[in-house]
Amino acid sequence: MNMTFIISLLEGLWGTVVLSVLTFIFGGLAGFLIALARISPVAALSKGTAVYIEIMQGLPLLVLMGLCFYGPGIFGYDSLTPLQAATFALTLYSSAYLGEIWRGCLQSVARPQWEAAECLGLSRWQRMKTVILPQALRIATPPTVGFMVQIVKNTSVASLVVGYAELSYNAKIINNSTFQPFLYFGIAALMYFAICYPLSVQSRALERKLNVANR
Amino acid sequence: MTYEFDFAAVLEYWPLLVQGTWTTLRLTFFCTIFGILIGAFCAVVRTGGPGWARHLVGLYVEFIRNTPLLIQSYFLIFGIASMGVRLPILVGATIALTINIGAYTTEIVRAGIESIHRGQLEAAECLGLSRVQTYLHVVIRPALERVYPALASQYVLLMLASSILSSVGVEELFGMANRIQSDTFRNFEVFVVLGVLYLILAVIVRAGFALLGLALFPRRRKLGTPL
Image 1 (cartoon, one colour):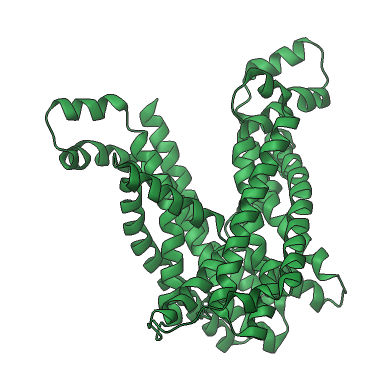
Image 2 (image 1 turned 90 degrees about the vertical axis):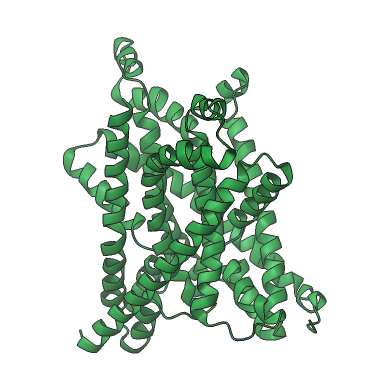
């Protein structure tokens, strides 16, 4: 065990955290728009996003990474850094999943709530903002926290195609020179666990709390 | 835009693509079988086993579900190699993926088992069924039936995630594509072709699970309720 290796792993961990946070912010924004488009009364919009979600959920993340890494070059954006390409791919990927999760949450708000808001003469946007979203937010919190775990785990493949240096990349580099896979991959696994496990526990706790309120 | 697309250069390598697709499908097939066996077994232990075994399964599930597949396969495959054991890479990949999917299956099947109504168990007891009989006929089958859609989509995700194992040297579809890439330098075209192939594979695997569901759960078929 060598201190410089541990520091290198911690640097990788920082890379993982940065990529996860960026993904969550951009993926969340895009996912929100997708959830709204998915339940929009405009057929073209909801069909279009349905196709988008279907494609994103049928592609491996690695293929998406490749498309996002080499694709922009074709349109003249040659200087995409690995972090930008990885964020781009992960944003597309998680926006589809988050959009689908949040669509379910929006639709699970009781039907009479929508109707009542309409009867009060609220516009579509007012109804969303003041009646539906506050209620949907409560339902959406546990699965969203649960999906954060997926995001953190998915960042691990960012090293494979685009070559972004995060935790699993640094762990592999270290293993290549030390040949102690159990030790260094074990430490890396524990680091991932240290991030993901609290999120999983939190997600379950929130779910339990919500169920009590519903009973 | 001055880029000239050249898909022909990529499609020339179709034997490699077919071979890779076949490997991906085989890998998915074996992992599905072993995964469901392990998952069902662990779920039974988790809900009705002795205390220490429940905790053990709980640890397994939490560890696997909270670490990435990539690190798990590095740990396992490079780890086994470092101990001097020579294992065919496809076998190693199957083990790594099975351990991974087993944990997810355990959680899904456990949810199914917990959704079985207490009255069912009491009825089984009144009919004089043994514990094993109760589990086989009253618990496991309806539980699997209930969570079947969730299981099916989890296994589609497994097929997609198997691409990650190309990083430890498995020549499945994604691994083959890496070879084509280094031969042709047509990176973007390779990924487009790959994307189309994986979308088709996802449709095939989903259809396979739907057909299997019709065969496995005749009661549902008779009732006409969707799987």
